[in-house]
Image 1 (cartoon, rainbow over the protein chains, first blue to last red):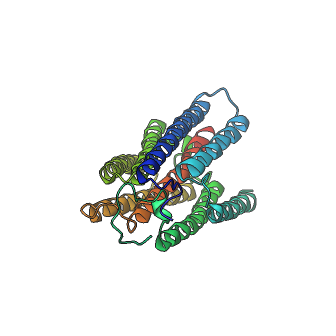
Image 2 (image 1 turned 90 degrees about the vertical axis):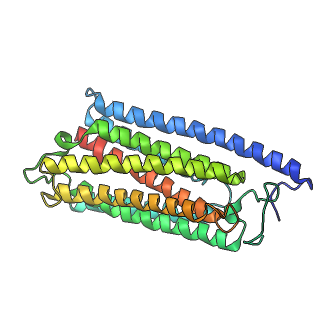
Image 3 (image 1 turned 90 degrees about the horizontal axis):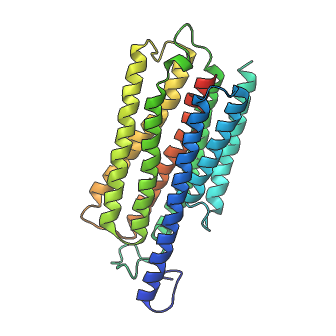
Length: 110
Length: 206
């Protein structure tokens, strides 16, 4: 199995793969622009003093989660097939992370 | 496919990082490592969140943090994440020189980030925010410093790969190495997104 696009003609395969890669790269640039926008919104939401922190804290946390999803699924290719075990590892880590933060904030904070 | 096979753009596989068994193992093992890194950083974030109000008379977060500096550092690191995507894009197209160029830009941007962080810490220390000042200071430097240490390690890693393979060119032996290093670099950015949100931005709103 040399590659997934066997037409039997290596030049046709190459042209096809190059085009697919270029298309994917375009999606990557779009996700980068969105990530920059999310960052700007988060900094402005905090810089703009009119919001109560009961609004701004959950809001910027949500923006961070969306941005990290872009990073994982596009930049780190988790949206591609063959990422079942990587997803298991990362979500396993996230589960432990969530429990740890939750425990520290309820047990230690009060 | 064999590791030492001489390849051309035509015969280079679509997913060179997973074309060999060794590549597949590296890919899987590295994601397991990233799961562990998630847990490591979670414990540091949890400690910081629990202790961030305990300033022991030192400057509180919203008086201390230099937000313009943090903003510029964030932009540098985010952009370096995109440039390493470009590097992997050229790797998949079997264009070794362009891959090296984009990894080089990534290293420069990462070094800029690290330089800003060192400058920032130096400023804080001069304001009395030293590591042993308070629980807030200790947990802040441990969390942000561990991330900075990861940035430094990532820079050395990518630079080492670039120098070691400069004359060798791209093959199925080193393609998984470059791929995994770029995953590491993205993960550093993932952690930074939570640091600038949870530490800096939440520190400003209290």
